[in-house]
Image: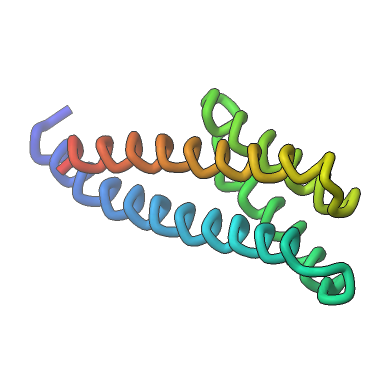
Length: 124
């Protein structure tokens, strides 16, 4: 492949990858924030529309992730555990499960975003 074609490809791919990173970060932040709020809210404060929105975000995120990347799979699995905890209701037994998976999801997405950012930098 000609060097000028390689440079042109990098100039196209890097902004697309950066947009994906930005969208992933926004989507996960929205999902984790809504899950934390939904979990912490009292039963009377919860609304079905909030839970539906969380479910939609989870499915959208699933489509953003690569099923061939271990940390992508681990992230979606953790988020599904959180989602299940939300559906089962808040109690002391589920509280640790919810917050442990929340923290793990944050760590996983940070690792994914860092790796992808390193890829963008190497492509520039």
